[in-house]
Image (cartoon, rainbow, N blue to C red; front, side, top):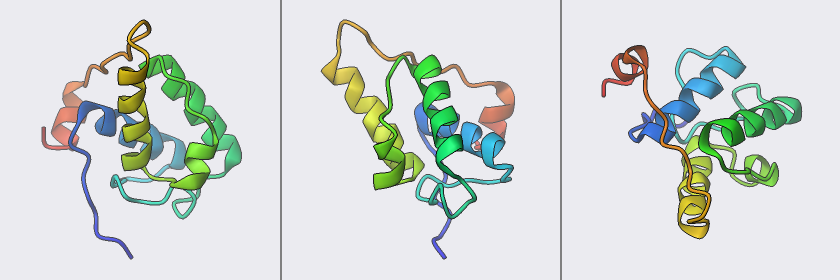
Length: 104
């Protein structure tokens, strides 16, 4: 079993919250495997849509299958910001609950 690695950036925190909500898991670390936590292709599709709507970035589904963890998805989102300056990603606003939950 992997040790818990907490999210640190706003992108990682938002992704962790989405994964926790979708997978009904209390705590998700940035290196936890999406599929080992109970994820499946339909949930990956739904999360890709949520990510697109939140961050203004299209996430190919193979990202979830190649390296299915928050750290990898967050790097893809952050890289997209640099590759598409005309359509920058949105910086997520964190709620007070999210900041307290992840001790930010």
